[in-house]
Image (tube, helix red, strand yellow):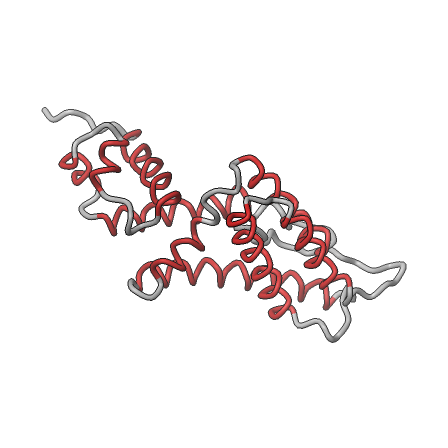
Length: 215
């Protein structure tokens, strides 16, 4: 009778692979290094993942789920969209203070490194950013339709601008080792929405469904 598989092993492999790839990048990380980090042989690693690409894609999928469940979806459940966007930047500033501004956004790192050389990575990262953009735009549109924003606000363009500001802030915080950039850029992102607000005494600013607001 064969030995029963330990369900904790695949999770440990994903965690160690994510740590190494996040800090060093896909191309600079080897399966030998991942196996050593997991305290197993390379042959044992191949028992769970047949190649480096398969393992890295599994890490990417797990990281995307983590972003969506723990850092993305909870932020914009309801309330003033401008406040929710500012909170997105504020939370990022706290996160990057904690880890010394190292590593950056895992999904963005993979997108930059791999999009021009591997369609599987490009498509998965593209779907993540498209979903983030579309959901944020949908909530901005809902607020606009209820009278929260003026007719000049283009929800999709605003969502793309906010996400671009966020990812740009991640890059600057990482390269300068300065998380305070999130405070400055977050205020700018908030002003982008505030400039389109319609001020009435009975304005409804409910955003509606939970929305991705932070990588």
